[in-house]
Length: 478
Figure 1 (tube, helix red, strand yellow):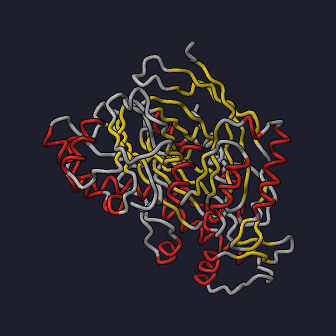
Figure 2 (tube, rainbow, N blue to C red):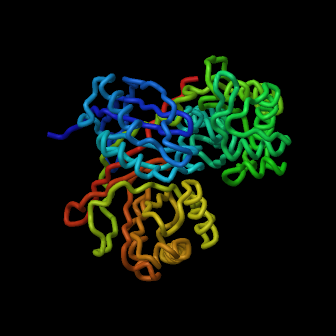
Figure 3 (cartoon, rainbow, N blue to C red):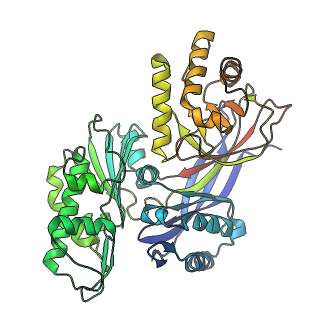
């Protein structure tokens, strides 16, 4: 008997610069009878437990306290009444300044091993911007209201910026502006200073160090400068020397006209009227930002999720079967697990080697990946017409775009929404140096933020079972 409805227990874990927390969700998946792939789609999602938010435990400036963190999450499982063995899917995301700690990869691995069948990822600044735009609801709102929205997630160490247009993130950026760039005790004695905080103090001619008591007016001055920098990078490229120095990534692409702004992250709780006592500059920073919002060129809207924007990315998965026109090289072995999906926005009318190369490069940059270093799946919607000259041009473009993957004999995985995988695969093998380690699949609907597992081929190698482990985000009801 065919299964048409599945209930799953999902978890999202975020280990950030300032705080760490988790969310458990129940996901209801149903089979889409109208889909050519019969893939499962998410019909319903309900958050069943929002965990306590703790300060991310550090042993020192360069090391995460993995033991304390895993103990905390095990306690959260008990409080939620959930057995780790019952988790079907989910994601562990290590973000912000924490992603730079030398043992960040181990934390993702330790938590994903402890907490069930999870995708583990250390999120670079562009990827974190993408997650925050989705988790806050900005992406969904941009689709629902046909708006172009600039979302800004202000965390402890960084502010992650993204532009969402018609339901897709079209540009991301990050700047070192956050509420925990310096910590004080109740008496105003500094007990932690970050490199960006030193840069701002140098700019102001201040010379504080750990153990010094900082004056209230100097805290205000530091927060004012950080707010100025943030508004500068939200309204145009960074121009001032300090803003350029504090940029973590490239600037946003401001060719997109902004219709609305949205803030999320811990500092945004204050921006939208929240309160609390913290040993940092979050509240002061929010006041300074609020005083400058008249410089923004469009209205500010409130997100569905603020401090929990990233952690709402609890994982879901859907089992899909690829179309029956796939292409597989015999050198590949299966299953292939935890492959990140990079959406490549190749437009068929613009097909050229330059266009394909630039779009592939853009997709890698969006995830802070280096071509040829990691195995990825490149997803194309409708990049090429099925005629030989066009397929040959597309094949040579892929060869030009992936020199390191080909040189290092990394598996090259190409996935298409349309039924063209076999044609593309055959022409690539015939016309390029990419004649081994190639897998080409079609009739799958994927997007940025998905991870996939590809199982052993079925029906004499004609179709592939693909488990899509999406990051699940809220639908904006505003």
